[in-house]
Image: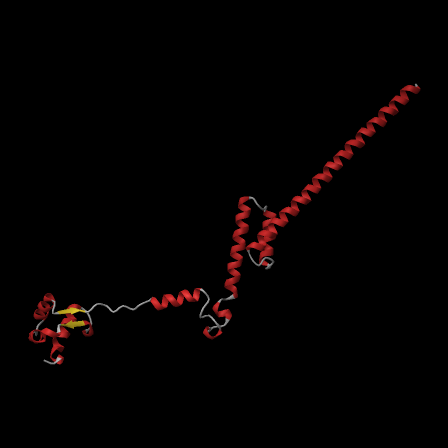
Amino acid sequence: MSRANLTIQKRLASSILKCGQRKVWVDPNEVSEISQANSRQDVRKLIKSGLVFKKPQASHSRFRAREHAAAKRLGRHTGTGKRKGTAEARMPTSVLWMRRMRVLRNLLRKYREQGKIDRHMYRELYAKSKGAVFKNKRVLIEHIHKAKAENARIQQLKDQAEAHRMRNKAVRERRAQRVAARREALLSGEQ
């Protein structure tokens, strides 16, 4: 028997199985029996007996797509011939700027909360960050270390100068006391 005689059966089966007619499989060895079925009830019996069933979903493999994506992560397939948009469209400078600012500002906030920098240095470095003085986090951290070392050095020099001043003041006072004592002794000796 020709396959054209099974059009009705396929249509009914596709309606029952809730799929397209191309997904309905009909047993080629039982064509005569299947062609006798002319109602939904008959087709349901055929489905139950396994002479008609729904073909499985054809797989759409992601293998090649995954391979390609893995290669792109390694930098393949990204030459000039593969680019459609401008460099600005592909990676906007504004996005790069925002990322950079967020990284630097988060670092400054963290350092201020930990007490590594005081609020004055925080404000100064915040403004410098906005002025594009630091191109990345590493440069900012180096600058902070240098600034802290410089501040410590200046403070040490101030402390030394203050100690020197106090020592000189004490020496002057002692000398004045000695001179006053000598003068007192001379005056009392004359009388």
